Length: 167
Image (tube, rainbow, N blue to C red; front, side):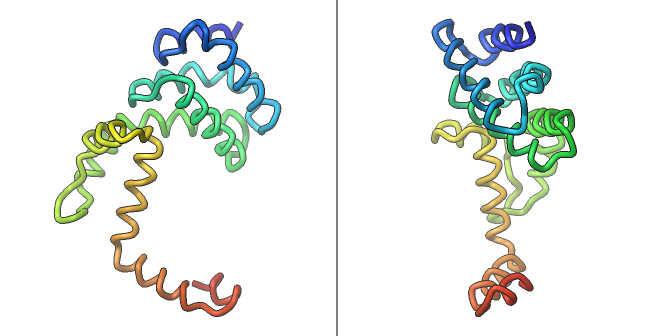
């Protein structure tokens, strides 16, 4: 029943078509069998996660796979499945929050603040989902930081594993 509700929500908010339902269910079942975030966990959390993801511009089977992968990654690092499901929901919800807009606007990148909503729109035009867009943005910000650049130089010149670990 819970998974049926997830599929109904997926049709309404995530762009699943009738012909996608069996494939999407099979993806969820396979992810549950292979990973740490089980099918009953998905039944509990996917509906709210899909809603948050849809608000951030995610939809369809490809983005559904991304959410399944996020749940599996979160399950590895979280204390339990409930924490993992909540962590993924919170990440997806933050993508459209005022908090991230304000924080991004306060980051000086290339001489100006970051327009996070604009970044997401531009990323989607280039085929990136909001999660990959956020990750790419973080990579660019960190790579432009002088302290990070210095650490990268030290890491490149480290001669052995012990020196690399120390850096």
